[in-house]
Image (tube, rainbow, N blue to C red):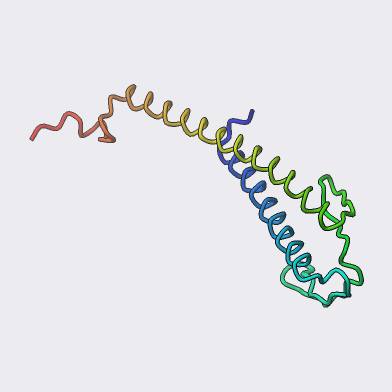
Length: 136
């Protein structure tokens, strides 16, 4: 268990990014299914990165390759891809919930330590020690 709050939050942000990508893919698949565009070739633009796009032609949109992790892609039919995405989203939601809980625990430990330091320094509500003995 890592005790670095920033690392935990960064890891959670990566999970959120993956979730966003899977939700975008799910939306695209649902649109393809709704419009029955799987029967004919599709012309589209593909982002190569850094907002550089090229035109592409998809001859058969009835199947799709989906990243399943560790650099592997699996060819799914559209309904299979939707089922995979649902399962993957459920798994990612569990991971993000655990990371959120872990970040909350770390935050709680930080507050506890800060309160302990404040008590050791005899600070009252953030008043610096030099001002605690000032009489008006």
